[in-house]
Structures are given as C-alpha cells and as structure tokens.
Amino acid sequence: MTTFLDSDTAESVQRATGCLRGWRREHQGLKVAVVYGPLSAEDQLYSTKCPVEQRSSTALAESLASLGVWFKILDPTDPGFLQELVRYDVALPNLHGPFGEDGRLQGLMDFLRMPYCGNGVAASAVAADKILCKRVMETLQVPTPDWRVWSGGPAEWCGDTVMVKPPFGGSSVGMALVHEEVDFHRALTRQNRRSEDHLTLTPARGGDLGRPAYAGYDRGGCRR
Image 1 (tube, rainbow, N blue to C red):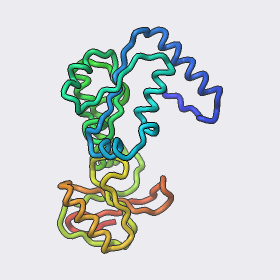
Image 2 (tube, rainbow, N blue to C red):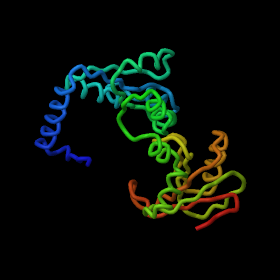
Image 3 (cartoon, helix red, strand yellow):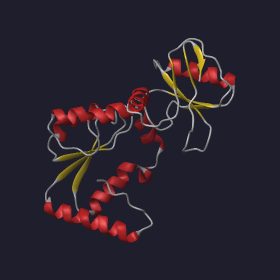
C-alpha cells in the first residue's frame, strides 16, 4: 500500500527517508539508470525551456545522491542507450509523453527482464491514451466527467468553453482553452495539422483542477 506524505510533516519525511536509507544499506552496490532525454515533443520542450536546476531529473539525481545510491542519467536518444542500459540493475524512467509513459519503454524493460519503477505496460498504455482511458473508466463504472471525440469534418459549437486536447501526450502540449466559436474552429484546424486522428474536448467549467462536465463533438455535430 502506498503511503502518502504531507510535505509539511517533517517527522513523516524523516521516517520515510530513514526507511529508504535502510533499504539502500540492504542493496549495496545497486546501480540505477535514470532514463531521461528529449525523446518526445514534451521532453524536447522541457529540456529547452526548463532551467536545469528546476528539472525533475535534477531532483531525482539529488535524491539518489543523498541516499548514497550509484546512478547515471541515460539519454534514450543516444545511439548506445540500449547497450549501456543493460549494465544497470534497475531503471528509473523520467520520460514524459509518447515512448516514455505510454507503455513502450515499459515493454522494452520487460523484454530485457530489467526491473523498473512505475506502472507496467498495460496501465501505462491505457493512461497515456486519453480516449482509451475514458472508455476503460466508463466500462468499469468509475465516475468521470462526460467527454466526446472529434474525428474530423464539421463540428458544431455548443456554446460552452471547452478544452481541445490531442489524445496522446501530456502537460499542455497541443492543448487549447477555447471560449469563442471562432477560436474553437481554429483550434480544430491546428490539431488537424498535427495529424491527430481524434481529439478529446472538455469544458472549462469549475475550478482549474475539477471539471464537473465534459462537452465535445464528433463528425455528426454537437452532443450532450
């Protein structure tokens, strides 16, 4: 069972850190490969715009170093990536978007019989595909905001503020918050240029984190 820590509770953090250090003492000599590099559009943007000291790979490196774990950051875009990867005991993926979070990297690790951190192939593939993830949640009757898919062609504006999203990729890459009909059609045109087959569209009602309803479009027009 995962333990969630309150970052304001110093005692909890110290206790968790102590457990990690105890684990490290039992695994002396363990070599960790931190997998990070500009493979997806998301990580390319991240590596060019985000200062080094603010990157998650830097935070991971500092944490591993504080625990006394031997590690190295491996870039999957390097030609010798696979040859070097197999020399390590465990992989710590830190990639974002396609090839990193969608099950492909996880499948590679499984094929290599290499332990890694995070979810496996199936969970990663489902979670990375916004449309598939919605369908799985509905099938399992997990409460989730309404949603629609647009597959190209004419789309009717329903009058709601919507978020236009590509089905793959994370963060804000390719997303557009649309308030007006003219901007809605522009957003769809931009998505077509990205050669995406489908889009998920969500209304922007509620706060930044909670969306009580989704609105969207398919080839036949507006549906609620």
